[in-house]
Length: 219
Image 1 (tube, rainbow, N blue to C red):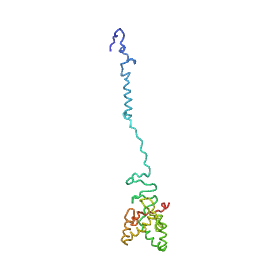
Image 2: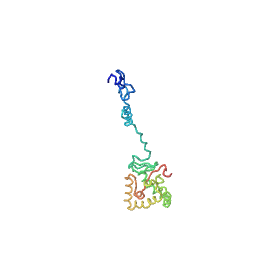
Image 3: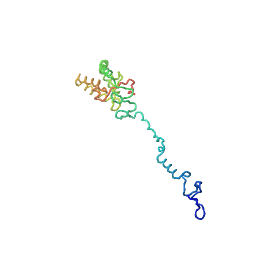
Image 4: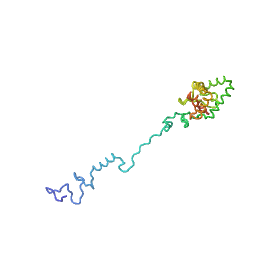
């Protein structure tokens, strides 16, 4: 910078006297220590908008958590199969069963088989048949009714109706006794070893036998 006057004897307006700062009104000159160029502030603001607060070491924004999975949607079940309301998945058989019921155990099933004999004798046979025709519509036989059991069809998630029970107690019983003791023994082995405890006559009608102590299937 020059301390000499400019042409015409006037001080150069761009060059200030020694020891004095640049005037704020200087049109083209900037002192970085006093008047920082305005484009630096604009660049800083633009950088904040473009890169967000992560540029300055702050944690990234957190996204809201997903809502919880509603109960009964079936996640975590085998195959992702949903569990209908009022049902539960029986882990042993893999069947959907009504809440409040369980698969009838082998002891109860065998007890129903032997109970049939005295019931037939007491009702003189014809009374047992009439009794059976009445309770078939509820998914029962006289022996099953006495011991608190019902036949259930997992394919439809409903109690076996009259015609399914008729199929079970006619064609199914014929399949049980077609080879006498041989098929009776096979039916017993099926009931003892299968996870769903189906006998031959249950396989014919597609039924399972449930213990229903609280009569939830009657409601």
